[in-house]
Image (cartoon, rainbow, N blue to C red; front, side, top):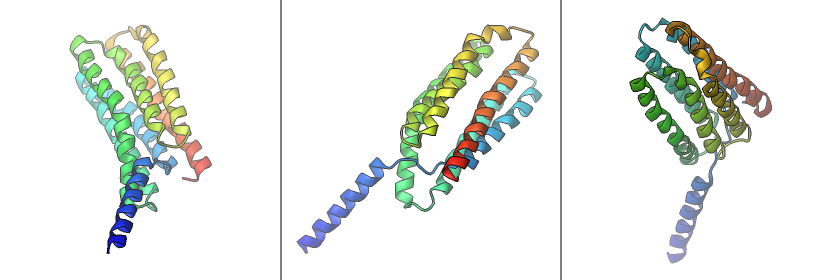
Length: 200
């Protein structure tokens, strides 16, 4: 009886250890590409808004939908793994991604209050890239590389934000193009690479 109890405890220990060390290796390239398509749709929907705040909320909704799509497709891609293991891996990935995203939300609120809309696209991409890099440490090697590209393009967007100092709706149109090219284009590119290299 004692031996059976020890065996059970050992199995539970092994399972918990595997869950803690689990990584998100089953990334869906199609899912990442879908995030890119959603980002491109944002470039169509955002210009339809007549208020700057509505423009911001449209892009935030697009980003949220993209993240849900990414997590959902990865969950489906890793369906061959035990539910507890893949849930643990996605939870750790999400927790690593969360701090930069929360920072972006705080800065977005500040930018809305101060009217500094031109700083949003670069800030979003910079912090999103930082989150992808930190979360990517728990995933395949292409994910941190993708995060680095987002950070670089986000920094460029911030440094050249003053170049968008044109009448407000021309200004918004240029930011829509930037977000579609970066958020949409980079996801499409890396999603295709992941799909080819990882057969996903």
